[in-house]
Image (tube, each protein chain N blue to C red):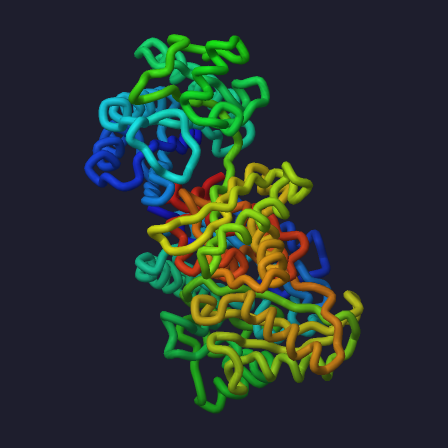
Length: 291
Length: 291
C-alpha cells in the first residue's frame, strides 16, 4: 500500500522561523519530502507523504500552526490567497487511490471546520471549482460572496478568521507546479506568454498560468500549474514558451519546479528526446521496483 | 536493502519455446522485469532482480537451461557471441551495492565453471577487459587464443563446449542498451555514424557502437551500449546521431531500448528539455518513495 501525498500551501515565504515551525508540525506525523519557499510569492509549499490517518494528523497540525503564526492582513506576496493555510490538496500517488485521498481530504476538512476556520472544497471533493474560484479578489471579496449567499463554506463558520482567513481543502491528481523565468522584469511579456499557453485563453489543455513580476528575484515569471500533465507534459509547455518568447525577442533565464516532479512527466519528455515512441513507466528500472 | 539486478544475454532470439524455457528457469528464483528478443541479433536479453542468493540460483538455472537448448554451431545472428549464455552481468542498483554484485558474480562464475563451461570474467571482477575482447572472432578464435596461452578462463575447463561455448560473467554499473534505427538499409551510413559516436574512435565518452544491417527488420541500425550514461546521457547520443544522420542525408526511423532505462537517464534528459538546470533524482516523487 503506497502512502498518500499532500502538498499544503501556506501564506508565508519569508519568515524562516514560521516556515520551520509549520514544517515541524507536519513532520511530527508525516515524511516531509520537500519545502519550497518563495519570498516574492510570500508562500511555502510542502510536499509530504504518510498513511491515511497520519496525513490527516499532519495536515491538521500544520494548519493549526499556520493559524497561530500568520496574519493575512500583513501579507503582501504576489501569489493570490485567502488563508494562512491557503490550499490543502490530498493527492493519490496512483489513480486507484483517489477514493482514499477523497476520504482523507474530507476528514481534514471536517477537523479544520471544527477548529473554527471556514473550509471550502475543491477538486474531486468539490463541485468542479478550483482554488482560483475562491481566491479571486482575496479574503474580503470571498467574505462578501459568502455574505451575499453566492457560496458557502462546506465546513466551519460562515465568517473568515480575520488573521487566518479560510482554508481550501481538496483531493486532486498530481499536478506539476512549474515556473519559467524571463531574463528580465518584462512583466507584460510574462502576462502575454501566460495568456498564450494557458487553457483558459485557448492555450494548452490542463495548463493554468499567470504572468508575475518578482522584484526580489529580479525577473518576470510565468507561474504555472500543469494540472493535466498527461495531456500537456511540461516539456511541451517549455517548448511553447520558448517559441513565444523568441517571437517577442525575450530571453528565458530558466525554469523552477515547486515541489516534486511525477516520474511520468520525465517519461513523456524522454519519449521525445530519446526517440522512444513507446516508452512508458514500465520501462524504467526504479519504477518497476515500486510495483 | 534493494535487490541486485542482472541482465543475462542468451544467443537465441527466434525460437520462442527456447526463450520461454530460459525465462521460466530464471523466474523460478528471480523477478523477470523484461525480456527483449531480437530475430536479427538472434539474441534475448533478460532483466531480472532478486536477493543476492536468489540471483545466483536464477542465473545458474538460466545458464544451464540455455546450455541444453542452444547450439552455437547453428547460430547465425548479427550480434557477436561466444556462448549460448553469452554474457552475464550482475548489476548493483546503487553504487554502494557494487561489492554485493561482485560477490554474486564470482559465485555464479564458480558454479558455472563447476558445471563444466569455461567462464571468462569482465568488468569489476575482471582485469578491465570487456565482453568484446572475448567475442572478437567468435568461439573458434577464442579457443585458439586460449590454446595459444593468450588468455585463460577464470573458472571451468580450458575447452569451450562445442554447442554452448563459454560464458562471460561480470559485475558492472547499470548501462543502457540502446539502438537507433535508420529509415533505410544503408548499413555503410550506420557504420559511419557508429564510428562518429563511439568512444573508441574519439566520439562520446562511455559509448560503444556498431553499425549493423537488420534484414528481417528491414533497416540498418546503430546498436549501442551506453556504458557511462552519467557522462553521456542517451539524449546526447540521440542528438549527435540526428546531427550526423542529417549531414549524410539519412532519416532516422526511431530508437529502441533493450531492457530497462535507469531513471537517472530520464532526469538528465529532463534537465535539458524542462530547462531545470538543478534537477536531480531527489526531485522526482516516485524516486523519493524508494529511499
